[in-house]
Amino acid sequence: MASATDQLNRPLGVLRLSLTARCNLACPYCLPDGVEPPGLLTLEQRLQVIGAAVSLGARSLRLTGGEPLLHGGLEELIAAVQPLRATQPAGPGLREIALTSNGLLLSAARARSLRAAGLDRITLSLDGTTGASVARMAGLADAAAGERALAAVLAAIEHARAAGFDPGRGALKLNAVIQRSANDDQLLPLAALARGRGVELRLIEFMDVGNRNGWRPEAVLSAAEMLERIGERWPLEPLGRARHGTASRWRYRDRDPESGGAHLAVVASVSAPFCGDCNRLRVTADGIAYTCLFATPGSGLDLRPWLQPDSPTGAVREAIAGLWSQRADRWSEQRQQAWQGDNPQSTATAPAHAEMAYLGG
Image (cartoon, rainbow, N blue to C red; front, side, top):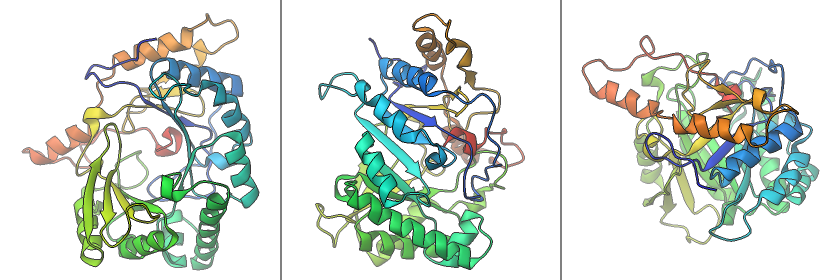
């Protein structure tokens, strides 16, 4: 079947599927409300959505939340998706199934069960290297709670590695959201931590997703400044951004390119937007499809009417294809254009956005 393309000729390539809106943290840049929306999709409905997206060209499935490890049926879903794998290198079908998690619940047994079910890659989140910084960025009560969370994530890295998620092959990565005057003092310590553990670190600019995080332009530490600070300590060599990718990658010049921890990445969706080749479709835990991380509330398409037992065969595929064919989102580019014009974008004039806890990042 032909791949779907949008109004800007961008193909559908990645499905980010949220499994829950619940989270065991309260990170200030996301601020989940802890409330699960009604009408969560069943396993069968999720499989229909995934199958439809794959038939329209999706080659990567990213499982998100909230915190996806809170979803009890995670391994069952991963195992059930395996028949949708590509059988030929250039043929249709899934080539990667990935999971984004804060890592607090990733025990050794859970890591092994995820790997056995068929998960290819895990990205863990960590925004600090001290109890105080972790507590501040995770919405925890105090430094002691932050120390426990830090220890859990560091253990999760080793559990994932032991289960076969090889960081040297990109199967295990670390995410960090960096916010000026909040945790930018953790930039070098985070890089040192990732280098020491042989894991690629992905630094993410503080984004204006949702309406709860108090985002303001001056709180953004640009990717360029992050790279400058780290490059002064460890010289870097640019590797570029893969087509349709979110991250620009860099290599530490003092590390063997084949070794773990040799790479650093930055996601510059604020300072250097990559809307032009964005290929991601997001579906919330209750079945609302969004074509942009910065979508406005109510702009998503509820897929549940096409996921009923009496729905015609292929109905949800046609619904997604119709949504994608009308897609013209490029908010990050529009934000940047507004900043560069006579009326710089501000929180006062920015449109309301759907909440990150529901969109899955």
